[in-house]
Image 1 (cartoon, rainbow, N blue to C red):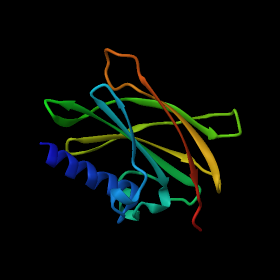
Image 2 (image 1 turned 90 degrees about the horizontal axis):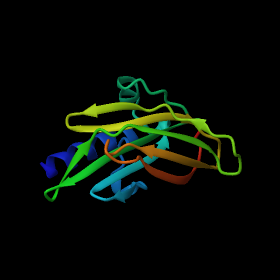
Image 3 (image 1 turned 180 degrees about the vertical axis):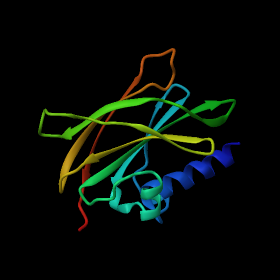
Length: 153
């Protein structure tokens, strides 16, 4: 099951986030919370193939980016996907104003991700603050990171 999940997860991540680039070529990040891995990555929507963007209703634009969050739980030595609602905000590092992110679920087989589209500015570090409800019996995990985007025109 792990091989099938990893293959499916990798295919979805590649299709949604980087088109033709392998995952090893991107900054795939995750935080470990107990038996859970919270994976997150953000990329310009211009990197999405047109067909993928249309199929998922995602606007391709040099000024827009996509944040993808997925959660895996280790059970008996295997990783399995978890439906984990996500909420959060994004804003420029030097600005205290934050914009709420509007997440929706994308599914492909057993794989599920929470995605949100947001506006970016050229060469501006963006600060993300997320709350990931990975287990309904626990408080949401807080994930925070900073990423700089370059707009390809």
